[in-house]
Amino acid sequence: MTDFETTRALFHMPDGVIYLDGNSLGPLPVAAKDRVSAMMTDQWGAMLIRGWNEARWMEMPRRIGDRVGRLIGALQGSVVMGDTLSIKVYQALASAIDLAAEQDPKRRVILSDSGNFPSDLYMAEGLIKSLDRGYQLKVVEPEAVEAAINETVAVTMLTEVDYRTGRLHDMRALTEKAHAAGALTVWDLAHSAGAIPVDLAGADADFAVGCTYKYLNGGPGAPAFIYVAPRFADKARPALSGWLGHEKPFAFDLNYRPGDGIDRMRVGTPPILALSALDVALDAWDGVEMADVRVKSIALCDLFIREVEARCPMLVLGSPREGLKRGSQVSFLHEEGYAIMQALISRGVIGDFRAPNAIRFGFTPLYIAERDVHAAVDILADIMTNQLWDAPQFKQKALVT
Ligand SMILES: *Cc1c(COP(=O)(O)O)cnc(C)c1O
Image 1: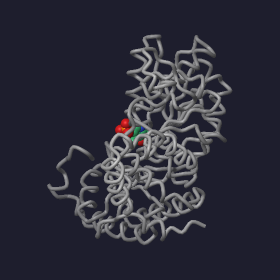
Image 2: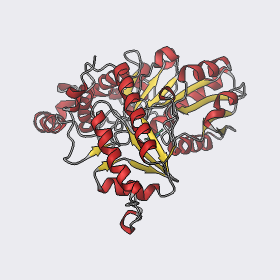
Image 3: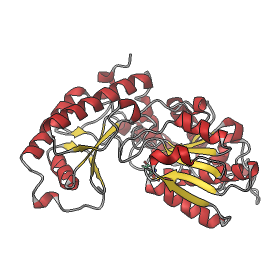
Image 4: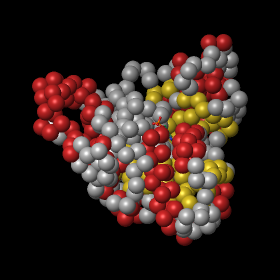
């Protein structure tokens, strides 16, 4: 059994804060400051450029990729770190489109849903436009995805957990359906990695991508990851053919030749400071069973829903009621959601707001316990019952919500 009081002590939490936004930005691991500082002194400072070899910086994207891989059911050697999630979406989709075209050049539909994060849809639009081969991005309602998978679809591009509602797609079933229809799959695990058990190999997913600053606590702007199924790793054409994805970067060839396997998904110089912060953050997962995380996450979310519905009848549940159909977050809807969230934050309960009307709360068993849920609901109930959100200072929209 995972000991969640032990993992809780691994994270820094400011006094007076109940942090229910680890689904957007995970908290600072206590060990990160010393580790990154030591890295700066002992490696960057002392070794200078020799660090690429002596401190094995160049291998970090692969080594850390394997650490993330363990949490998402990927075989060793099939995940690599780098860039941001938006870039990785572009890369995965471009490779998937090419492979799909080899199988059946007539297909023109890239299928996604309206619960996807806009950046994924924007990246797909941009890619389709620059390919100029007549691809069409078809966006259906999340519930209509399964029925929309047919023999016109080249690639499905889906985010497993809806960032607004927490609704969970059935990765295994949709992948199976896509494959049966002759399509390839790209899965975005932004709200899955570190939140729920993921079994990429078991689900037979083709490509997957995700970020590490949400449930994996790698810090603001931490590098993203990409997974390529081993069967495609040596076939996928890298659309972003940077020098570090080259077979021999230090041969400085004038022509691009893709590297072996997942290495070809590397683009440019890896962010070593950010990777070392992520490396410490991943230590928190040593000895943690994803199945235990899932059980506790569902219990925390269920408790929150039950308490909020009992004490704040003016809030409407915006997430699936059934635990197994959700990720690790819960949303409630209210037309004054923005002001309600600002009032909560002013009282130390940090969640976030997603337009047009959702207040969103992430439940992260590594450092959130039942007592936090009770304390957060006490404050939310006070704000709702006494309409404390109805004050001008809570209605001023900030740049980041
Ligand atoms: C958080 C998130 C992103 C953010 O992409 P970045 O490039 O890291 O800013 C993209 N897609 C999904 C589904 C997300 O949840």
